[in-house]
Length: 230
Image (cartoon, rainbow, N blue to C red; front, side, top):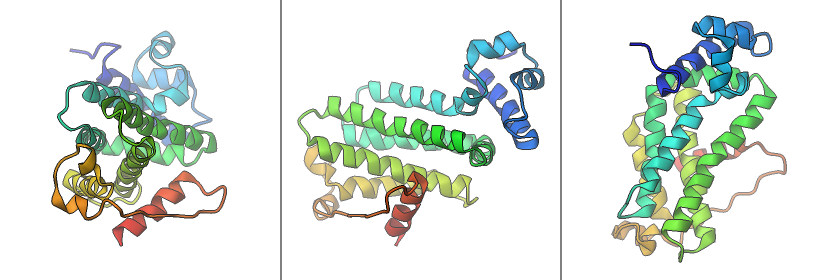
């Protein structure tokens, strides 16, 4: 049975066909008509699902943002753990879509405009986490909430990039361990994120990093990741 036009599988199939074309012909040399023909759909069907060929590249992020939001809308005993679990959910799906993600990485990093859009798209996860925690833990420090969500997002992105860009074999449990350390390091236990005694000893740990103006977000994440690895 063919996937319906509004299904995730259908949209990902079209996106995969587009990325295959981009990787061979180049992004600028590939038209919407080319993508539609390769996908076996009409131009009209394409535009019912996507605004343009740049949207098709990031459809996986759109799907995962919706899934993460739905996950956070459910009831959770511990909102801080829920944010970590939402990040884990996103990573697990990217692990399933590894080849798609690798193709997208190659295409995006050959086009400055697409790289800029990717940075904006990735930031949406952090914003989702912040908005959730501000609602679920409204009395908690807004600054620490932002710091926590930024670090969770950066940790996820660093581990994901190691797998996608560098080809390192990383298991979901590796990210889970890294996220648990972040949660402990931010002392989330005092805010209702569990009672791990190891967290209390690290609640005052602070890392201050200084970068030159104009340093890319990717360079910042890589540098912080290397520091944390050490």
